Image 1 (spheres, rainbow, N blue to C red):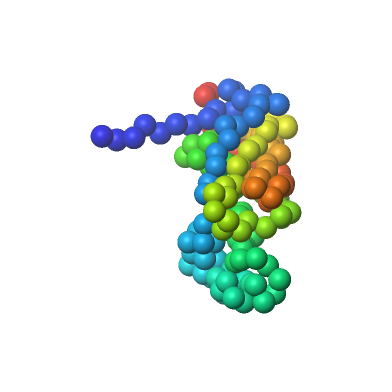
Image 2: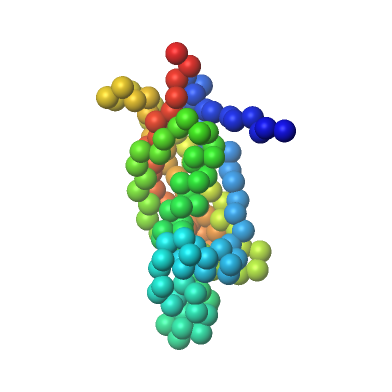
Length: 148
């Protein structure tokens, strides 16, 4: 059975609207595979626990490219296949460690809705929080499809 594709349309969103929260478990496999396989970041603090501990961290920790990818996927999965992520600016705050039960709760709020160069755009404040506090803080701009 084919899965129905859901798209969010520009006409159906409003400034101040919160996107549904999505949580992602943070474990060693995600951190290591995100660093080595997905982003080719071979810095040992992202895959070698002993090295990370020698540098003062309690464990390996997620790299910014993996954090960026998880947030982009969150936004794109909410908006649907016809949307386009135009820009995303994030800053990292506290690390994502693979602590038992640690999750990153991703959230976004629409802060602006406008048209520019034929695109129907929304700007969002985005965040990803874990058990230590805010991991990702930033903004994103997405182009959404229209009904007309």
